Length: 257
Image (cartoon, rainbow, N blue to C red; front, side):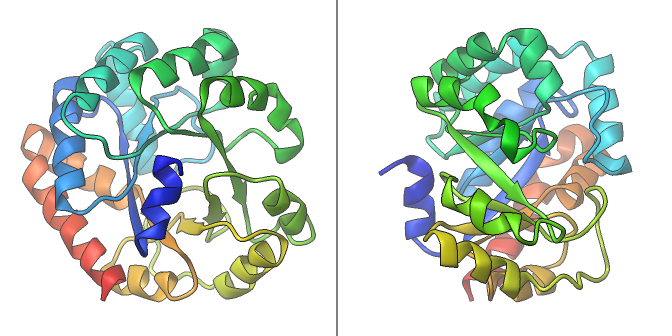
């Protein structure tokens, strides 16, 4: 059983996202193990990119801060190696197809595997083009996570039937960011997935409060939160570990109740 399958076998998963290197890589190396101890089941590390088309202003600004500080993909790989000395929490890279192509797809996946990454999420790579990366993911033992959106409709079954790890269910149209209401019929999306394949479904985009997390977790196997955490990191800077971990504990408790 992979580390990711193991996570979902233990109950509802809380999956926080952070922009790697915000405010700096040393802080990321401290924050990831602390979040794991606070209850994070799987942690998404966003690789900073200058054109993150799926992200709202909060994560865009974090990407700009990190890129301006001189963080590179190679420095991030080294950072993950150090994180792996402190925790075995499952880790997923979230990035875009362009940085992977520019780095070299096979080289990227090989290095990701060597530093201990479990999964890869590429929001701007259409399902139909997954073979650009899937052979390298398979070669190096990294699970390529598929995304579905409210507009996927009849494609949901096709995507689900060939997916691995878990399905990332995008809860809302548009980009990432905190939302006061989520009106998508999540239950229907999840049920279409499960008809095609018995695979965990985790919901992201817009979730920020314990109440939203609790509601979403009734239909799904996991809850993903990014912008709300990146906002805390932006507010507290190098003092963000405590506040972020308090938030993680609160959200984990909400979906475990």
